[in-house]
Amino acid sequence: MSSRNLQILLVEDSEDDVLLTEEALRHGRKAKGLHVVGDGEAAMDYLRQQYADESPPDLVILDLNLPKRGGMEVLEELKEDPIFRSLPVVVLTTSCSEHDIARAYDSQVNAYLTKPIDVDDFIGMVRMIEAFYLRTVSLPLSQ
Image 1 (cartoon, rainbow, N blue to C red):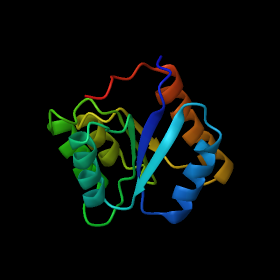
Image 2: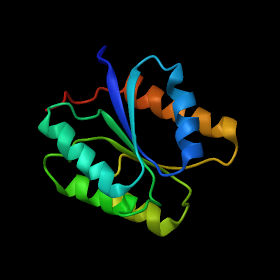
Image 3: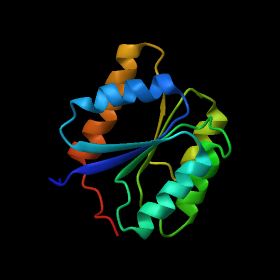
């Protein structure tokens, strides 16, 4: 487990879900940076720039239903590219489709979670993601 300040990229187009995620992480112990983009193209642009600057995020939380380029396309591109392949990606989406779940795991997603409807449950889920990925597991050092 690392003591470094960890960065999260949130790829989410719902302002409400962004605000809830920010609230959930506000009192987190390890998540020191949250960068938000609202579509798949912006996510890929951001990641390419961060890797070029040698400061990639430690975790991506990715919605599937995004404008410009869908979350599944982003996931597939990340996991097919050797530069991004080891970047942990958690899908957090409204879709509970068996097809989407299977396709995401076929594309090497690290976890697939369905967004709870209840606000407290949503905040709890985001805190669970933070606790597991940013406080419990060992993540690779940024390249």
